[in-house]
Length: 76
Image: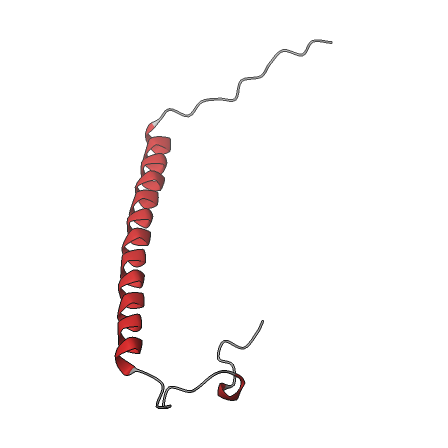
């Protein structure tokens, strides 16, 4: 697995360079933050749906009569 934070000398200008615009970086960070919050909300909704399905199936299994396995006659 590669390094998540490559050495700063291997890439373009660093954040402190005069060509870097802090407002652009802040806007990009805000956009990414909003996207993460929206994705988090979607994932939470999916977890709720999955939990509801699991609980419904568990409750249905405990409330339904236990059926004995059916044996088919052998045809020899």
